[in-house]
Length: 166
Image (cartoon, rainbow, N blue to C red; front, side, top):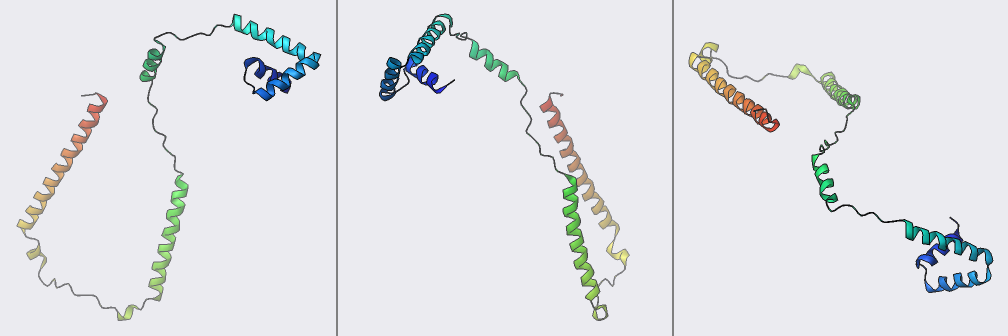
C-alpha cells in the first residue's frame, strides 16, 4: 500500500485530522489520477460494507471455550537440565584445592614434637560395654527404626491417595 492509498483510506474512514482533510481535498480537486484512485477505493469500501457480515460468536461460546480449557492437561513446570560435567569440574577443582592444602600442611609439619592426648580409658572394655548398655542401645535403635518405617509407609500412603489408587 502506497502512502497516497493510506492517506485516502484514512480520509474515507474519517481517521485524519482537519489539516490532512484539507490537503487531501485540495489534491483531489487538482489531481485526476488521485481522484480516480479515490473513486476506486470508495467502490471497494462500499462492496466491503455490503458483502461482509461480521460474525458474532454464539451465546455459549465463552462457556464452551472455558470448558475445553479446564479439561486440558496442566503443563508441568519446566525443569532445568544441569550439565553434570560442570558439577564434576567444580567439585574436582575444590577437591584439588583441598588436597593441595592438606598436602602442604603435611609437607611442612614437624611430627617430632606432637604428643597425643591421653583419653583416660584405663578401664577394660568389658566394663564400658556391659549387657545392660548393649540392650538399651539395641532397644533405642529398634524404636527409631520403627518410627522411621512408620513415617515411610505413611508417606507412601499419602502419595497413593493423591493418585487415587487407594
